[in-house]
Image (cartoon, rainbow, N blue to C red; front, side, top):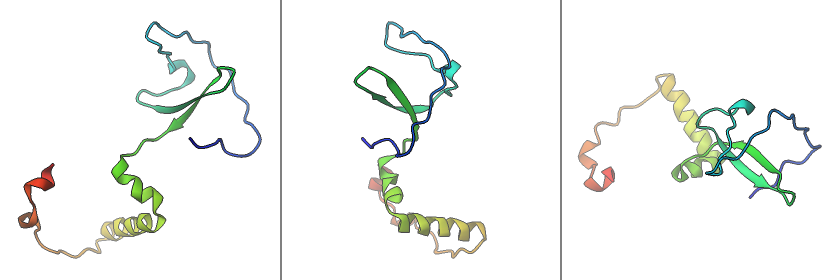
Length: 102
């Protein structure tokens, strides 16, 4: 797990007090959490929990995040497409196999 960013600590604002239900859940709505939001949960030796908002991506897309040159090529391709600078390479449906659908 990655370390917290360097720099001075940012103070926390107490929003509410919450109770853990019988299934181990805590409602975060009053703290401003949006439905479907994801958080990395860290716990220190004192039992303090820190929730950090995260965005999860599919593993197959990780290569784009790890390779800035590839990400730039994709950005350029999107920009060129939006500007109408495309080349029709024909129909590739004849090259598809059943394995492509899996």
